[in-house]
Image 1 (tube, rainbow, N blue to C red):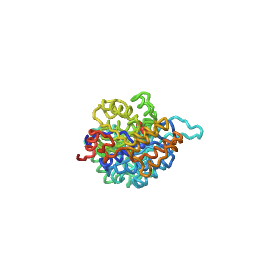
Image 2: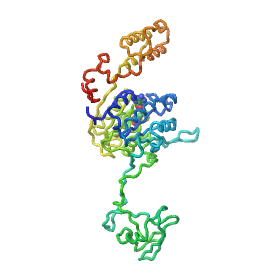
Image 3: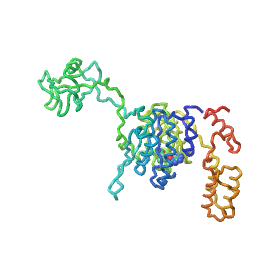
Image 4: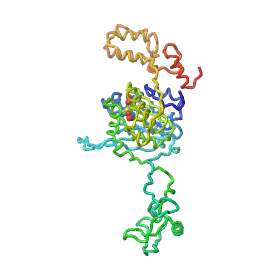
Length: 453
Ligand SMILES: C[S@@+](CC[C@H](N)C(=O)[O-])C[C@H]1O[C@@H](n2cnc3c(N)ncnc32)[C@H](O)[C@@H]1O
C-alpha cells in the first residue's frame, strides 16, 4: 500500500475519518461532500430523516474532524438544499470561520414546474464553499477559449481582438480625431478613456490603436486592440451562477446513473459535470480529493478521470455494486460522464478496504434476531467477549424481566449495552486475538499507518 493509492473505504464515515486522520492530516486539497439533506424523504436507503438537532450534531461531529484533513490551501465544498442550508452555513461559520466563507455556488436542479400549490418552483440547490484559510486559495473558472483573437493585419504583436477603450473607472477625457475621415470620438457618457493622451500616441505608433479608413455612422473611428499576449490568466473567474446551467441538473445525473448501472435503487446522484467544475476550480493533478458521503461514487470517478488522488467512504453495502463496479469501469476506460471532455482513456487503480467490525457483528445479530431466546443467547455471548458499555452491569441483568419485554424493546436494551465506541476495531487492539483480525490484515494496517512490527 502506498501513500498515493486511491482508497475506497466501507464503513461509518465518522470512524473512517478518525482512522484516516493520522495518515492524511493537512494533506487533503479538497473535501467534496454530498451529505443527506435531511429532507424527511423516506425514498432513500440511508437515513434522510433525522430530527433537525440530530442531523446538526451528526454533521458537526464529521465536519470538525474533516477540517483537520485540509491542507493550508485546502477547500471544503458541500451540497445542500433549503431544508438545512442556513443551519449548515452557521455550523460551517463556527467550524471554519466566517472569514473563510468563499461563496455559495448555485446548482440548477430541474427545469420543470412542480409546486403548483405555493406557486413557487424551487429549481436550485446550494453548494457552500469554505477555505481552510481564504487568503491562501485561488479558484479558477472555465478555461478561456481565445477563439475571438485573430491576426488579420499580421500585427507583429500577435493575435488580437477589438476591445472597449473606455471604462467607468477610466481617468482620461479628450477627443480622438481620425486622420482619414476627420471623425472625432469622445468617451461614451459617464465613461473615460483607459489611456492618457501621451499614451495614445505610443499606441498609434505601436499599432495597438488603428484608425479605420472608412466606418459607419455608429462606428468608432479607431480600433483598440487587446492582444492575446496581454491576457495573464488562462481561466475565467468562477461565477456563483456557473452551475445554473442545464448540464448540471439532476436529470443529467440520473441518465448517467442508468447508463452505468442499469436500474438500481439509488436516489439523486450528482452529475459528473458538476463534480468536474468543483474539482477543476480547486485542485490540480495529483492533489488529494476526499468524499466521505460517496453514494454512487461520482466524486471518485471524476477525480480519477482528472488524475487527482481520491479517498471515498461509504457505509452502505451498495458500495460494492455501485462504487466498486463504477471504478472498475472507469479504470477500463468508461466513456460516459466527463470522459470525452477530459480525454479519459482508462488506467490507474484503487485499494478497497472495510473497517473491521467488532461489536457491529453483535449489532447485526441483534438486528436480525427473531425471538427473545435468541436475544438471550446473544446476551451471553456479549458477556463473554465483554465489549459492553462501562456503566452496564450485566450480572445484575434480570432474565425474567428481559423475557417479558417486547421483541423491539429487548433489542433496544441489548443494543444499549453494546459500547458503540467499539463498533469498529481500533488500531491499537488489532493484534488482540479476541478480534479475529487475520495476520495479513494486521500487517496491512501496520503498513498503512507506518508502524513497525
Ligand atoms: C446524497 S448521497 C451522495 C451521492 C453522491 N454525491 C453521488 O453522486 O452518488 C449520500 C451518501 O452518504 C452516505 N452516508 C450517509 N451517512 C453516512 C455515514 N454515517 N457514513 C458513511 N456514509 C454515509 C449514504 O449512504 C449515501 O450513499
